[in-house]
Length: 91
Image (cartoon, rainbow, N blue to C red; front, side, top):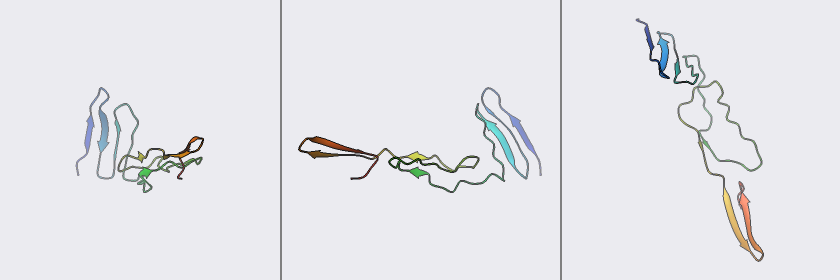
């Protein structure tokens, strides 16, 4: 099988490909992917939780799509003295 090697400068794409894997750099970032890179299988849609750190274990893994972080939940309740606000918490 033939080997493809290419280069496009000025913040473009540089890389090479053969039958076993493909590696490269895209733009000014450092992005590498080959056939041994583990696929991220976690959540891609995240709802923030109150007072809790949330971490998506995606470092060094290939992701198939963008992560969407939903808006922070916000609720208001009227009462005799004004308004009670709940941020990142359900009523």
